[in-house]
Image (cartoon, rainbow, N blue to C red; front, top):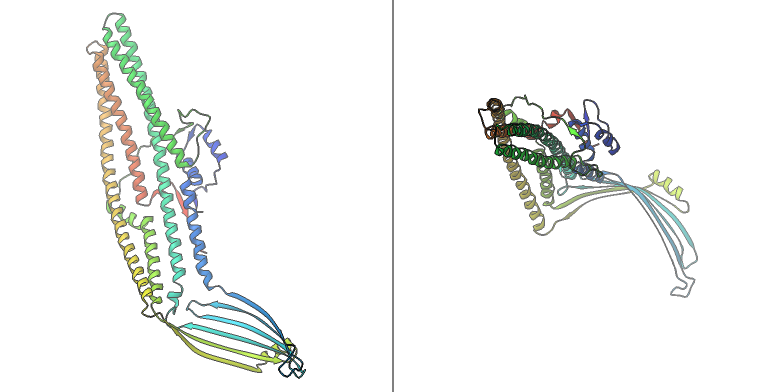
Length: 497
């Protein structure tokens, strides 16, 4: 699993610690991300992929591990009569063999072995014989065409290495997406939390206006219709609170889903178990588009993963091209041998003294007629590489569109936020003026309620603009690969041993 380290090292957070955290009055964004990186299901699933890829790499490396082999065989035969009715014959043959075999990165296979043959028996003339023959041999097989060279023999290892890099980049993409999703979900809760407080404040204003309208009706200053208008305004504010509570509950559940935990099942689910931080004021400058695009190109894990896939296809092509060559192997072998009438130890001593030896050299050739299958495999490998090259260009183009669209959106939401701020200031001044006129009896309550509604909507638009700006900044941080820096996280990615 990939471990993530912050400036202060994050310790593992289990569900019991999470319960203590939630028992606090407020859940911080940092705590939410910590819990997410421990419990999110997509994170936990994705963290297994690098482990699988590492084992696949180990499996490819194991092709060059030494192989130990051993065998033994015993055979006996007996004849009771011969052709001339003399005493029969018997034989007892035993063979033991052991050795080690290793494949080298240039395709060479080296085998060192020892062999012991024990033969015992008697002939028809009743003479018996026993012999022990031992040899110490080494053999070498070197491909000269198909399978020759370091590149083709390490193609499997390099392909697995590229696969490991692809899994790391895919995992990094998942982690970035999860962090961005968690932050966006967290600020969504903050947005609805603040809107609920705003709705409650609006309700208090509506109730105050209703009480004032009733008092004015009591003294005969206004008609009952103005009281009805104030009551209708109060009912609208209650309805807004109900709708906002529902949206807040949905946003909170989305945050819990991102964090990979379940809410307290003992609650009715109407309100969150705890609060979150308020929406922050963003004062960050927007970088130049060219800088954002260069950062995205350099850090985008999807492009990096695709580059690793392309590398895999290139190694597939290397292996397929080698397979189109004929098999032509140089085979060399040599041994020292020794013989003794009775003891295997003496036979081995004779072999070590090089009393006997043999050697051989030869060539082995084979090839499929026409090599249709091998040539087809090479064409397939080349076309798959071409596919991945095109897919890389498509991903790059898609990334460019996303970065440019997000950059435009970020500028737009900044301008929208500025406009919404000015609108709120204007509506506050207008409402205060209309309220002053109403208190002096120069305005009807309907006009005041309209101004209050306009002010409420302006404040909600300002809140929505703040959230939209935060959401766009989060998306830009994800696309530009700065989401880790945004939260002070330094990822430690697995490495091949």
